[in-house]
Figure 1 (cartoon, rainbow, N blue to C red):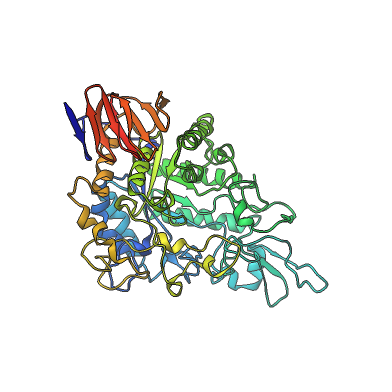
Figure 2 (cartoon, helix red, strand yellow):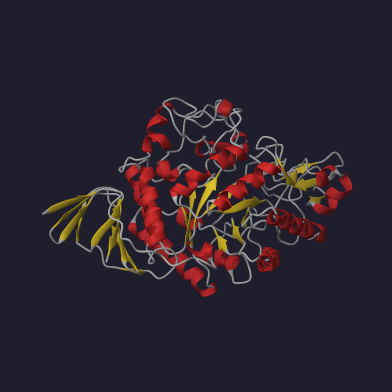
Length: 534
């Protein structure tokens, strides 16, 4: 007899134990890029009230928490990562009452809320930088080189391209590892430490459940600010220790924040966490950020960069798990975010492969991060006109690729024409004309859609005790196929572009593409991930 399985598949009625303490160890956290999620007022820019209205969608999707990108007062030189006031909401996104409402609505729905904190730099419009004397105490200023100080203090380059230094009208230079509008803070100054401790407490008092620490590897610079000796430095991030990134001194800052978070959580009776955005040259160095007295999690960019083949995937999975095991932290897995090409496009443009990658990620031990729109199968938008682009690195040379706008195009919610229900007006970046088939409305209720695949996978992950954090063992598999066992579940991944035949491992639960079961064997199409009950 031949049986064909399509998503959502069969779901056993197993109930997972309560999460309780350590909720973050196996959580699925959904990233909301606020300006592109949902617009409530028709100005074409997403806002907090728009996000609040979509909380039922997030609840139905099945995630555990939501991470909000910066919505603080900002000139928006870098999409809000240039903060002028860490305790105020930018009028583009609403006000503090809107933030309270969103946090409250999420909590009422059983979702936790994580917000961004940006400690490496501020906006050049921050009151500290606007005061010439305070600026020279609380930011990184140096005299220039050359006979009249006309040359930068060293050869460091901005991540966005060009020199990492800008000269002031006083003749000295200030450091900005990103845009010139984002001066780097001087973490040798105790006032900076005290200010950020107060900022964390402010948002904890408003009810947030944790923080995603932007550029968590960047606050401390090597003594003497030594030259690097080569150009194209942005290409070195994540492959070697640089004098401005991943310096050992950052860990003292993170330990102090962990003490603050633990003390606050103990006082209010809930667990609050911090997640590091940290680029490190190895999985072992990344694990330093999640030692028991430091941050709770760190993004696993090594996994995001893995190729779609069994050797690369198995290597990065093993290295990730091996590195965090000695420090007792869970691994994290992420395929897409607001700074990288969406994984559907990055993995070759195949929706089948993107769906398989998602099921693989959700079957791995630890915590998973989803980026808004990946559950719709959205591709990267590659043909944005130059005149609409806003990524600051697009306008400078030798930095990042400058095309981060392509993953930030506003979400399609409903309808046949742009802005697809994003809001009552247009959208700040144009949406493709063929996204009508990818809207939430179009995919809801269609068992073959990517949205329903994610919903089913997240429901199974919540109900199956063997998924989430815990043990994992590799199993024998044909060439081009990965197979690993979790308690009660076997996951198989065919990375080939052609079907593969497997001995029938158990009852099929969910597959990213139709699987044919005939007697004692199963035929899985190319680029397919399947979960089996064993």
